Length: 294
Length: 170
Image (tube, rainbow over all chains, first blue to last red; front, side):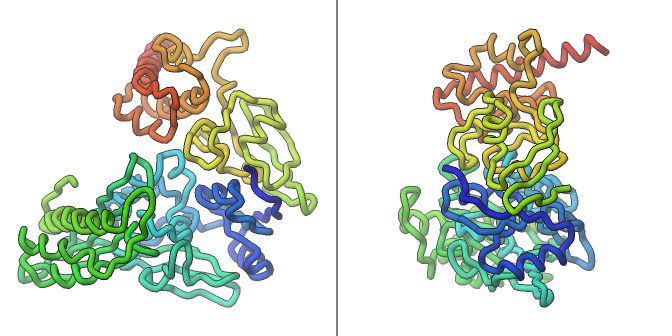
């Protein structure tokens, strides 16, 4: 099928884009990489009256680090992020999760922010953002607000973004020495959305025990979700085999995964447990400075 | 710079296979349809129209791109290369096409234009890809004849041929 007709706007700066979004409200969609939006428009699952193409908006392609924060602007490509030495060094989870997104030709146009704003509950990057305790920077004509990733995702393909607002960047705290991260997933085929995936960050405490832990899952609910019971189980433990097994066993607590042709709810609960175990083991080893492959 | 000339159409200046075009396009025109319909370059094949099959892959400013997931209106100032750019004017096959021919890298041929353009991008980066590099680069291109082994073989052989050609010219 072909997209329905729409008006195409190509603002040159952010103020112009925000004015256009304010004017057209819910009739407008922001176009960045287009690797999700255009697919939906081709299938007429989305038929916006107005498309605001932000690719020529100056400054949105910045990928920068300052004061312990890595910030990716709205038109930073997934491929750019994945291959960026800054991302590899300071937010390796984002690079590791990013390498699982579709295929290189899709990632070379698709944006990190676009994936977050699209909020597919099975997608890797929103889940990585959640595990990294990331933030979403939102702008509208009335100003800027910063939303914790935990509060940004409200349901399948829905976020706390209001009409007239757009995501201008995502920010993650820099991953420091003593913190290990890992992303693992099971997908039917290489490049497919995962049936289930797990992103984990584990910080080693001064006493040698496990400190702050964040575990986020995709494909496990209506939005990327935290496995809080598993986090609590691991935090304060010695991070050994038994502790990881105990945490993994609790990863599916409170989950209500969807069931579809790719996997039943029970299968997804099973994957949540198994993959959490793998992700935690790798993250703990990396926190200890051992660079283990998943 | 894109300017909206009428509420409906957008003016773009785009270079396709070394030919400059100055066009008015409907915003909803996909690059794939611009190429096939407007410019009559029907070598680019449209399979799934949702970015999954890779048949419509072309190079946009050198990057392998799904032409079904980009609006032509977005491409003011862009340079596009399609499969028609590969063979010489006299019909001489490009080394990548020659390698597909020699290694039985195509069967029905529907996926081939996308495979060739994906291979083009890869072989621009390296003429000595490992088979796994080829699988990574073309992993998003589906061949319903499932001739993948020979496609991988063809791309590796094409790399070797291109390396020889380049060394010969050096």
